[in-house]
Amino acid sequence: MEYLNQTTPRRFILLGFSNVLHLQVIIFITFLTMYLMTISGNLLLIIIVRINPRLHSPMYFFLTSLSLTDIIFSSSIDPVILMNIFSKDRSISSLGCAVQMYISLAMGVTECVLLAFMAYDRYAAICRPLHYNTIMSKALCIYLVAGTWTVGFVNSFVQVFLAFQLQFCNCPNVNHYFCEVPAFIRMACRDTFVIELSIYITGGIFAVSSFCLILISYVHIISNILKIISSEGRQKSFSTCVSHLTAVILYYGTIMFMYLRPQSKKYSHRSSKSDNIVPIFYATVTPMLNPFIYSIRNKDVKNTFINQFKRKQFH
Image (cartoon, rainbow, N blue to C red; front, side, top):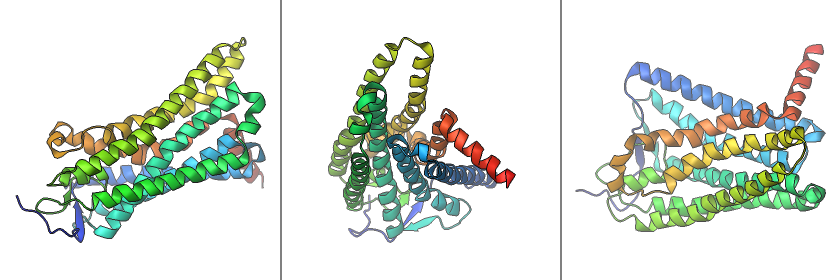
């Protein structure tokens, strides 16, 4: 089996698209619709939170940070997918591939940690309501969000650096829609132990520990809600958590499937189709659904939107 030169190839060829015209049209319309909904939905949520002083609380501060993360996450992937669907030259430069991998991986880790902090915020609001403002101070929220972004970008730098040290077989064909670390591992011809170990370590630190923090928070939240005598009070408290739990299940389920399982080529025959389909959920579908998930059950967000809409109609 031949190896490419020790240096990184100048361009990578993305092979995750169909060559059948009617399928290309369907894929293009689907991805374009999802991308437009992601951008418009998340931007609208950020604007609504900014214009309503009642929404200037820690929960909505984390929510706007999540929306910004989703916008950047999708924008690092979807435009490249849309450009390549009908293109005969489906290649991407080495630098473009590295940038795409770096930004998407950084936003993925950032979203993992943000969801955990949002669960802790719900714990503080429901289980420690009298001390909520003290626990979730403005300074702490800023430090937490800044810390998640810093951790995301530092970890991403390490993973991308290791991915581009790999040697690839024959030609640099990426059997994927975009540049992602698991796809690079499946392309590699030589030992990938170092980068796989790095993924499992960082995955354990960020994904698993964040997921455990979410579980612990919700164990306390649910036990506290069950103690509420009023059924209306229980329903109101639980409704604030349903949207967040929905986002957690969608995101963590898909991202842990992709990153916390054997990545080597010898395992790739087991789930080659899912390796291309599953990333679409955490990279495209979840960022699109998040603003709707958090808005549908949120009266403050809906009322702000309706009032602004009526005010514009009146003027």
